[in-house]
Image (cartoon, rainbow, N blue to C red; front, side, top):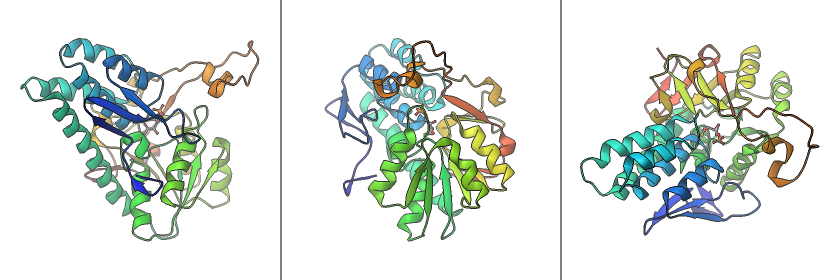
Length: 319
Ligand code: MRU
């Protein structure tokens, strides 16, 4: 991704220290979070220094390299950080499988992460084939380079289309309560891709006005039948897209697909702290007595999905 005109990834390693662009601070401040231990990585995932399924997978792979002397213990710590994104579990298992043959753990982790980046680049190329000049596209949450180390999943086709000179316009849902839509807006701003940020409740309004031609979101876990977990609010956008005959695509690499689950009903939905709603960004918005629920994800049933944009191509239906 471009940051102030220079190419950069969201996560990198130098001398066995892992550097993350701290997503809690963006877009107001560009700060780095450094991890030297497994606990540093676990904290980064839990507290959303790093967020987005493939980026969490990359963090976990580096975490496994840092904790390679006690792989099973490290795997347990990392698996307990967040429950929904499959990439985390995929990365931990990949590392457990590949550490057995005595290879350098950081080399194994780096190979894994470079592969994620390459898969996202290919998602961009395949997704770009769906994008016509002049299209106005809605996305939810952030499925950009920040969420995947580079390129993104949902945002990768936007980058590819823009690079090819296609005239596109992106609607970025704000994505309460953590405002990941602001990260999307920041990435698009950095790349010069025309966009607006809208509140989550406005998507239906713009669809009704005929101003949205397509929806592309990322995913955190996709069951064997194509039901997909993504940031809370994604399901509503899929229902609205169906109502307005707007194609709805889910973009994700292989690490997000979980064939061990038959349907989305088996996906664990993370419930996050009520403080994210009552005290967003550490500032009190609601009185103490307000009782809230804060599910971080929802499930979009496969019948609402037009197709899955993967690194191997656009798949119309799973199973
Ligand atoms: O809770 P988060 O911010 O980690 O959730 C992220 C999302 O839901 C993304 O849209 C999804 O992971 C796709 S990331 C390419």
